[in-house]
Structures are given as structure tokens and as C-alpha cells.
Length: 355
Image 1 (cartoon, rainbow, N blue to C red):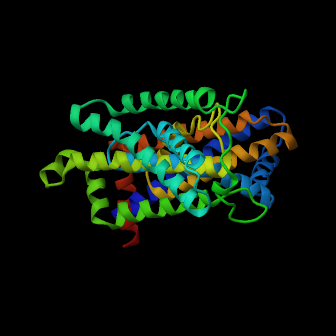
Image 2 (cartoon, helix red, strand yellow):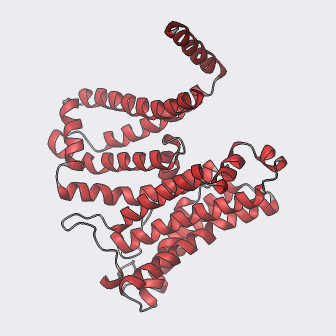
Image 3 (tube, rainbow, N blue to C red):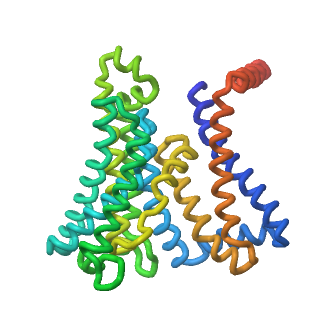
């Protein structure tokens, strides 16, 4: 029964947050002179109204799913990895360098580039992990600073070292090392499928294996885990490496499947977006992927909404921000002693009524 209560709470808070965000968004739309119901209809029509729109939505969701799973895994294991963007960029850089300079094409070229991106992301994630367990440094500050290092390093590549003539960007990778589309006529590639598989594997590892239990135990209580014989530092470092590897794989998939080149603004904002989506998804891998898909729907559908009703796309940004605010507030409220006491009284009365 207690497990059922927690599960219901994990689903109710995000759902209520989304509902409240849309209600407030509807009020804003009405204040702008638009019909909120028509605007929401066009929002979802823009995201799912045709095969092309669905493909665009899934394409937009792919990098968000990778960075949100990166944050989800790290936070579930009790470490705060805010360097998802830097790890994403290092993965894309490694994938580009491998695909562009190795000369290997076809299936093996794609796999090699993705593995290079995964390795680079894992190494970039390992840096704050080593500094935390070895020197006691704050992993949040270090991982954030590494985001800037990765961004500036990418800037050196596309403006100087591997610049495409006079244009500040790198040349595009060869067509033979690009991720193919899953369905003809739809933009999304096998990168989306890889993201879904990664999410399902993370769910299995975290909740159905002994290693995942140890990682979650460290996340719940490091002191108790240490006294029960769990190697806490090893688990923390493993969490950083796997978390970074997920983001790095996402960077490689985005480069080979959508962008094809390094350019100014590549990957900007994905890391912190992923943190927000992981928190809204209650640090559950499957729920986190659903939230990432929902955010992609808002971002893709807002253009159609604006064209059809005149509601600016910034309203979609407001709804996204409100979902985050309401989710964080809801999670904080559910942890209050007063709320838990009220919840126990409600369940006790319902149990007594059933008898």
C-alpha cells in the first residue's frame, strides 16, 4: 500500500503541474484575445498533425531525452551532475573528429563515431567525479565550469582548426557516416530509438539489478550505505561516468543524425533542460523520457499555434517554465510533515470507511 501511495504521488505531481501550467497558459492566451482551446488544438496539431510533424517532434525530443536521462541517472545515485551540456558537446566533438578524419564509413563508421562520443562524454563526466571523491570538491561548480570549457573548445574547432573556408563552422560529415532515418518521410533517425533503448536499459539496471540497488541506496543515504559495506566512492564515480557517457552518446547521435557539423549554438541549453525534465519526471527513466517528449511537443507545436491563432511562441516557453515551477513546488510540498500527516489521515479515514 505504501509503495502504491508513493507511485501515485510520483505521477500525480507532474500531471497536476502540467494541468495547472496549461490553465495559466490558457488565461494568458485569453488575455491576448485568442481562443485557448483553439490554440491548444493547433499546438498539438503542429506536433502530431502529419507524419512530417511527428518526425520533427521526435527529432526535437531526441537530444532532450539523452540529457534528461543523463541527469536522471546521476541524481538517482545521489550525485549532482550539472555538466550534461559539456558532456553532450564533448561527445559531439569526438563523434565529428572520428567521422571526419578516420575515413571509415558505413555501419562501422557510424558505430565507431558513436562509441567515440560515448567515451568522450564518460571521460568528461569522470573529471568532476574524481575531484569530488578524491579532493572533496563541489561537483556542481566543477561540472558547470566544464560546460564552458567544452563550449569554448568547440568554438576553437569551428572557427580555427577545422573551419569550413570562410564560414565559422566545420565541414559536414560524409553522408555515409550519418544516422539513417527510421521511416521514410519522417525526420527522426535511429538516434531516437537509441535514446529509448538507453532509457529502458537504465530503468532495468536501476530497479531490477543488484548494482542498481546499490547505486540507489547510495543516493538515498550515503552513510547508511557505507556502513552496510557498499563502496560509496566507487558508486559515485560510476554514476558520473555513466551519466556523462549517456550525454556523450546523445551528442554523437545529434551530430550524426541532425546537425552533421559543429556550429555556433550547437547543443546550447540541452544540459539544464535535461535537469529540469529529470526533476519533473521524479527521477524515473521512463517518466523522464515522456517529459522530454512533452517539452518537444510544446517547442515544435508552438510555431503552428502562432501561425494559426496569433499566440506568440513565448507563451509555450511560459508553459514550460510553469511546469517546472509547479513540479518543484509540488515535490517540496509532498515532503512537508504537515502534508504527510494530512495524507495519512485521509488514507486512515478511507480504510476505516471500507471496513
